[in-house]
Amino acid sequence: MNDATRPFAPTARLLHWLMAAMILTMLFIGVGMVATVSGWHSRLLSIHRPLGIAILVLALVRLGVRMRRAPPPLPADLPALQKLAAHASHWLLYALMIAMPLIGWAMLSAGGYPVMLGASVHLPPILPADPVAFAILRHLHTWLALLLFLTFLLHLAAALYHGLIRRDGVLSSMTGWRPPAAAQARGELPVVH
Amino acid sequence: MNPSSRSGTPVGHLGAYVLIGATVVIIAAAFAYVGGWLAPHRLTPARLVDQLQTDSGGVFAGYRRNHAKGVCVTGYFDSNGQGAAYSVAQVFAPGERTPIVGRFAIPGGNPYAPDDSIPIRSMALRFSLANGQQWRTGMNDMPVFPVSTPQAFYQLLQAQQPDAATGKPDPQKMGAFFSAHPETGAFLAWVKTAKPSASFATESYWSLNAFELIDAHGQQHPVRWRMVPETSVGNAPGPTVGTDFLATDLRQRLSQGPLRWHLLITLAQPGDPIDDAAKEWPADRRSVDAGTLVLTRTEPQQSGPCRDINYDPLVLPHGIAASRDPLLPARSAAYADSYLRRTSEEAHLPGAASASTKPDSRS
Image (cartoon, rainbow over all chains, first blue to last red; front, side, top):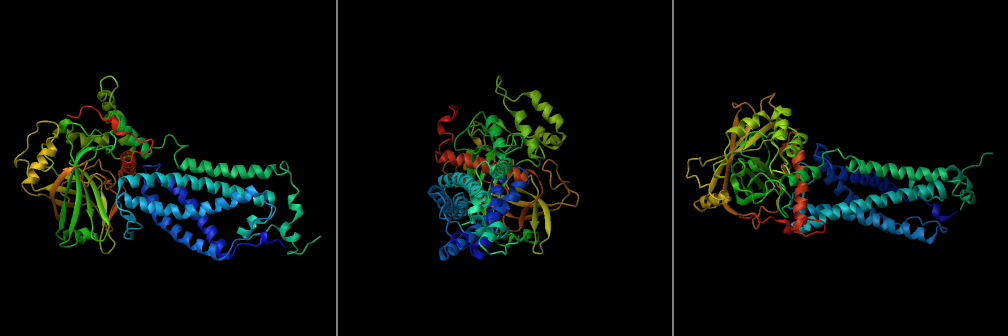
């Protein structure tokens, strides 16, 4: 049995799918709230900040899980360029899911805003109020969000490519669901003729 | 590795490739729609601020896109405890003193506009509560706003756009707007009697929008507030000569001592319009005097502490919440857009307007 088909640890899978939902939601909330003057602006903004901090906390937990237990290796026969793309995009995703909430927090601090997570909970500023720093961080927040969205799309397309076209066990190592054909071939399911 | 899983050719996988491509395209399109790129008719903060810039005759780099001309003030708010029955906000606790950074201004995007060019004055305040929370409010010296919705405000801005030939708003377009928007009646009645005041100090400033105060039992009290001056009109009105008499008058008054306003919080009765800033509430509604605003100092906005503050009316402490007034999220969204534009100009970021677009008419 090839080690490439070893599934991710249950904790890693749980964190992956939970954060996938949270980050995708976050990207849509972020792009939507700055593009409307309706009541959605304030509703979405009030979700955006606490959700961002929740993503930051989970991303740090996830980084710890990842450091303690190596993920299953990629299939040995995967072309080198695809391996490189896989590793680079995974580390980019980690970097962005940690950087984005920190930039948001720093940006509100530099803008002199109280960093309210709810009606009465707020975080301390992590930068002194400074309009130049605010402007740079605010633009960075937008551009890195778009980069995160593009990286997510690439990640999704690659996952589907592994699952639907290569059928090499990479997708199932994260879904935990194994296509019957692949499982049978490994002798894990009884073959019924 | 299962050899049978590699049996497909690219052609054999056509369906799978189409499925992957379609999934990516659908998600990207949904993202673009939510972000407004595929919804050209949606009123976005950027469109609103673009129209403000057009009406101002261009971009004044580094300045607010509306209420561009103003001065900074500092002082404090002394709570008398009367507001604490209606709101748990720390600013209303008995004896609480809260530092204030504020700003007086006149509407419009031109920071060099003469003070008598418009009969409206505004007061914006940032209360920095001891618990780290903030209360920001932007008020005008009129009891009602002309319109009820952000869409109508955008149409008003469009109607006010200066005509290319005359440099002034087209009276026909203005007339058409007001007759199509009967909700502007209360404002028009006010503006008929309004004169450009000679002083910021003699004006009352209204919150315009309603808010909810939240008391210790979690009960909500819909309110509007206003700042009522202790200084009366007859008290040494300043000269209205020149274009910047408001700042001069304020400096002169503050050199003789602090200026005071009372924060009057008006409680709504059931049925009062709490989501419509264009409608006045009946005059007999009960008001609570929650304390005294004391302003001690004024500085030019270029160097003063108010310069980098976005007076977003939805920056609220625990104990004060937004009402359902649709203008509130629109103000918040548009102020944020304006703030990003002017701080980007301050930072000289690529694509931001540069200060060279300032007009010559500074006198």
